Image (cartoon, rainbow, N blue to C red):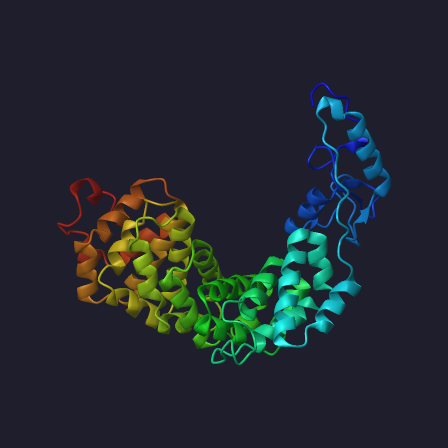
Length: 412
């Protein structure tokens, strides 16, 4: 390729490679379909990469003239090792999608429809946007909302070894990378869709439960606080179960991200504590294989839940609670250290019985907080550590549990 003179208008401005499926934006600039779809839909950008103009209409028009020129050029240079670019398959039309949905009346037709939709979505992002604007989201949501965990494959008139409609519907919904408008529409169904996802998490397969969590995370990211505070206790029970079952790394990560988003609002921290999230999070922290980001999120959720009496009580009930939180200080990251010290501050402020203060001494928590003051670990973390130590200076300051090299760090 280095020895071949490639016409510059054959090169995609994004990938800087020869285009395979040239399409033109409303700004008049042509890109390779895969690159511009990734820019617009996966990257969620709203401007033309070259002109920087805001794109009001994301419709991609195939540049047939340029594609034919490309194909002719490839044939002329075949002796130099240039392969001919095949004619791309045209994107699906709205009319085709609508017909597909109308024909999906019986359970068997519905399964065939889901299989076809999955294939269409897998082809390109343009198909996904077309599906979204043609009623596919509503069709898939209706399958989720009508999910009956007691129904058998026989009663639904499909084969035992065939695909399960609920699994496929959730898989496609997630793969569509829904726009904010569609996510808000799902949220706005009087909470019915959230209830349905909760039911799926309660009775569904591992695959369905994972997709339900991933969808909930996407919805929570665009929800307003009033919608977040209405989440029911059963949802928190199912989220905790997903963490406990360790369905997959992706599902666990999405669950933690969801809990980080929703726990600070309303009574959600209490709902999470009552659902048993604290012992599960502590057990995850005890697992040495926890990645840095996962550890930060676990401590962030623990910090939020320890903002209520129920959460603090659960932390102290766990034999390893204080020890593992203290251990993560200065071992993971500045974010993790700050969250861990905030948790200890909550305990020191609201649960400071003589037994708890003694346990904090014996576990080395006090010594660790003195060490925080000596090292460069962020001003906020130091400020919180100093506050904890000052709160109980009478009990801890002259404690033999503090190494002599750290005694000088104890705040006056």
